[in-house]
Length: 266
Image 1 (tube, helix red, strand yellow):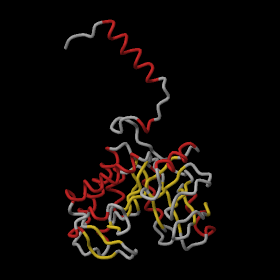
Image 2 (tube, rainbow, N blue to C red; image 1 turned 45 degrees about the vertical axis):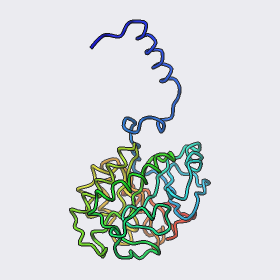
Image 3 (cartoon, rainbow, N blue to C red; image 1 turned 180 degrees about the vertical axis):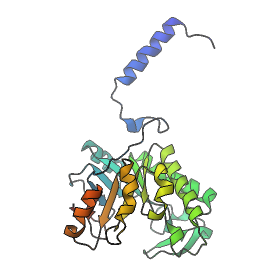
Image 4 (cartoon, rainbow, N blue to C red; image 1 turned 90 degrees about the vertical axis):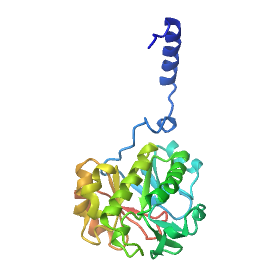
């Protein structure tokens, strides 16, 4: 390879120095090269999936709906010093999303108990991957720092498809890869049984009601690896579960099931 002539090399060096001093936000860098955010155990958080975000809660992490919030909403939270997680359903079709028509009917299984939702056939990874890539592109383009992919344990439910644990591992790893390719951190939602196999693929965990079901200790591998566990309870009083989860270093709070603004942190 030919060497650069000295004058051209000087120009390149000056341009590099100017770029380094520009204070450019990491979120504008190439997602393939920027560092993925790694939330640490014990971080306080807010989880609001009901409507557009209320930015008034003073916590360092927000988890909000990716479709219902805008890039301006995310930017507002960033200006306040918050990291922002993009909630996206990856395990079920939702009839209220703008991309609902992109999903072939053959992908749709049984209703999952939530109005307007039906399980997806996660074995069909070649069909699902581009659909999920577009959703994660949305999260990236709006400036989110991370993704919370929901319903990633369909193999343990009555989906209408003969899903296996191996199918779920393959799909969940694909979801983690899609996030990381876009420079986004990604959380493992529930799916406690597969934590040993998936710990290295995910950057944090999101859990519902581990105290209610006596399962919080199963999340310890995340904490031991220096990865946050964002946890909520719905039914048990905070005084009942907070002492235990504080010892486990979980990021815990009491929420109402509709996941509005109200919260009672541990």
